[in-house]
Image 1 (cartoon, rainbow, N blue to C red):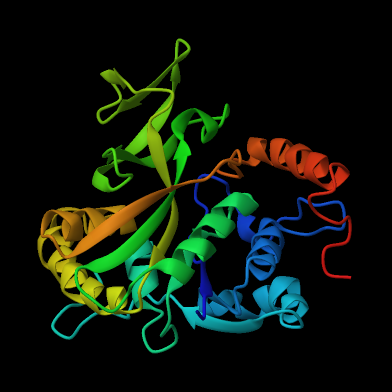
Image 2 (tube, rainbow, N blue to C red):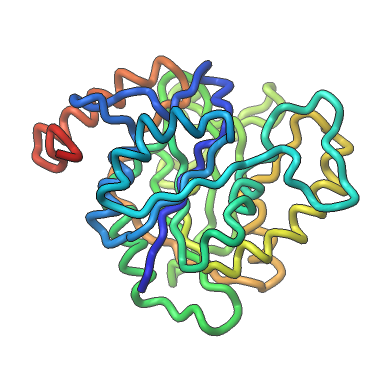
Length: 305
């Protein structure tokens, strides 16, 4: 079955302090996206769609798009703050993108096949691409409810030592079906224990082996249409409360569809350790991890030669 990889790269990188999506991390100056696209090609994906800001189109083409287009079909879609339904307007002073669920809405009309979604600045490892590619080949997308999959990582394998992270914490049944997902926006180790806070005062422990969503999803194309009313509801009910910073998160949308029986979600085990660049201080760890994978023969030293 045709498979598309969608890479969300329109975030501003506020904690990182720069356009981290194009920061070199490999021995041949490859960026994290290079390794994701390389893994996708190896696992049978035929198209990659980059969700970016219009003003970053040229630098993305020069850094990654033109290079990988020799190996996979490349398309660009633009996450635009003004891309909202009729009857709504962008709050005065708002510059922050609307969030990951809105990013996926940008793919309407471009993605018409099952698609895998990842963050541009996360290194997932080949196992995530393999389990999702295999799942797509076996899934029955014809009947409702919508069939969705998620690559799940152990929470202990998804942290950084340089600050807090945001993760979707998952409840999974014995059949590896997602029961619930709750986005925790501030997770870190406190006195050696993985914990989260919602108010900077009280910290609640989480299991080391809790299953975390890393925004590594697989959706049928119909999912995009189902996001539209959810986004409208967000604009109507949540933006007035926090007009400059409210975001609509992909895990929240999936959770809503789960609770309303619109979808089922298979949780697939990703065995690789996640690495990513949430903060500038994370970069040396990513460089080190990729260098080891290259020396172990998982990736060639020059990716696209």
